[in-house]
Length: 208
Image 1 (tube, rainbow, N blue to C red):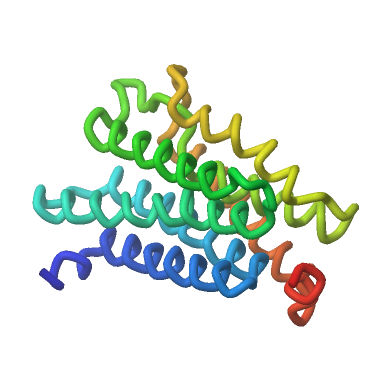
Image 2 (image 1 turned 90 degrees about the vertical axis):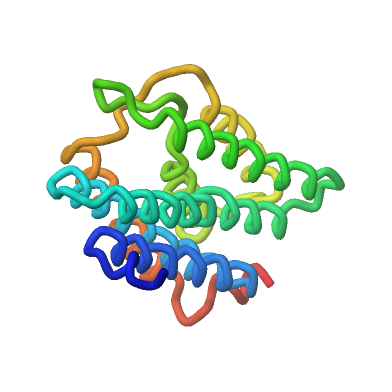
């Protein structure tokens, strides 16, 4: 069982899963900026794995194992971590219902993608989950550097339509070197920016 993650692509996926899990733990403890910054590295790992998988031949069993690991990581960084942040900041009575629906919608998207995958043009149906954390990072950066936001209102306002885009019937280019490189660049930039602006836990103090 433990031999499968030792494969090159699966090892990167496992690192991404560790980043996802640690990010979720940090967010749950109130370290929102640090958690999101670390979670972005799970997206980077996901895109690196995509490039490795495109360029190398991987045994069927190893590939299936990596696909399952990748799905768990995506569910955490693309759904659970943002849902925790939204639940913490939102004071609306229905916030718990919304966060549960957010996780359900994105789990449905993952299940669909797991079965149907990409089409012949390397397009996927619906918006990939990897868009959510960079959007959350951008909101936190605006709140922390430009102007304080009412996150309890802004986050649901942004993530309700965003989550519905995950299951919308449109096609989007989701694979290929330019796509992966762009996603990695965005994730690295956002992660570094969050780390720089999150001075000595200042964000936690101002939001606790």
